[in-house]
Length: 214
Image 1 (cartoon, rainbow, N blue to C red):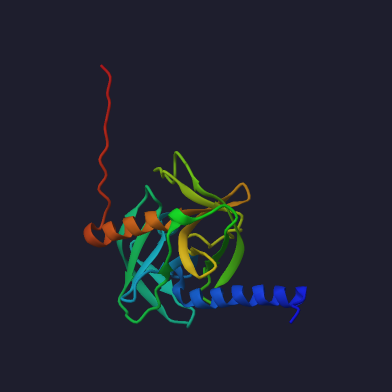
Image 2 (cartoon, rainbow, N blue to C red):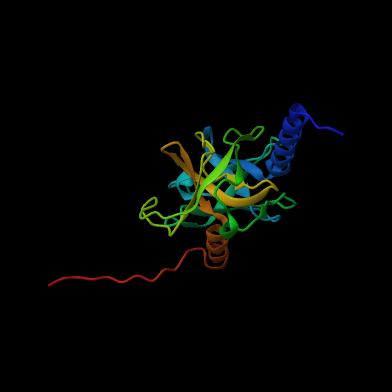
């Protein structure tokens, strides 16, 4: 059977829709009261949610809104300004966590989908390709990261804290910023490491060397 171009486009479109549908239950609104600040990514079935540290700012009580219309108050388990990652916990179970991928295997040109839910309704999405899977940055929200994932997926206001996923719906990064027409995301391998430490200690312990002059 000969497949024409419209059938190919329809097949690609349906595949993207399937990925968005798969991830949507794991994408939540992060805010407080009437304020809608950003997005969160459900990390575990028992209520752990990852977001960007700059989304929660100085808040001590965070409202999490799910696409089914329910809202929960989350406590802040820990935050890491260095990587711009914060971990929240809601007192509920049977959530739908994301499937995590491996950001070390990202390639230039690889398809990615960025999702967000800043209004607590149906999640929104943008798409693009990876333009640099290991871009080094010196300063990041007051800290620094060895590398970030850069893509041309547009990150609209409210996309911070949402997942960047590959064609199979596996999270490869947490969206953080949009600059110079490029989306910047924290690599999921970095997120895994930060989340593990925040769950265990509630903070990140980092060694540093200070130098003073006479």
